[in-house]
Image (cartoon, rainbow, N blue to C red; front, top):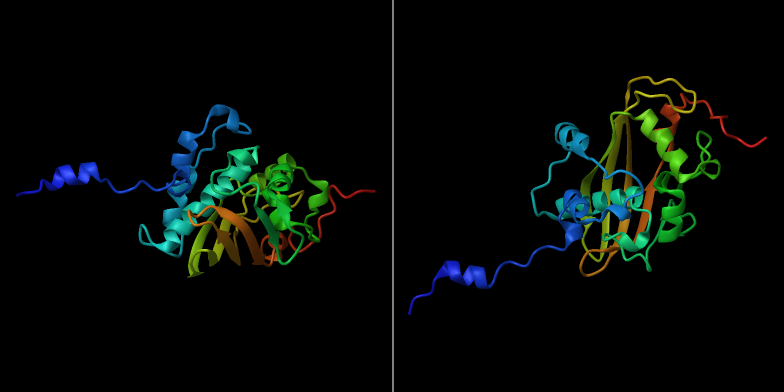
Length: 230
């Protein structure tokens, strides 16, 4: 008896990865127009710049590559989808996150005030309490008109508790709260501990990093006064 390998493969195909593990473009393509805060996000610039400027290369299918893609989907969803119920990368009803051992924030709070306000928080160079979701995004998109990119450097432990080192970078080419750009490349490094489900959806994130690596150069080492209450 002979077995047709082709027929066997067609009858028993490899299971497809969950949508949130297929990358940002797949998640964007599957979303409905009403899910977006505004325009559909476009990551053409990221596709061009990151391969050229990243410092860590990861083999396709490696844990580092999977984790990096998942976090990028998460960042895209929290920035561009207003309703946490539509975030595929997280279990919204269980999600919580915090920075440097601070206050835990749930998914609704994340969606309300935005990733910049939560992840940066208060600093001599930035007061998150005075900024909205919209104003915070405008501030940093203005300062980094060419993009502010992110990559995983190393994954130190795998699921269900994933610990990783990462790098953020971009060129300071636009004004930051009245401070003029220097054109320098700003880099910041940190560690994140992510707790995930069996199917790799995020339920908890803890970030540890020094936000002065970002804000100090933007403000030229001078505390920002703009927007402070009288």
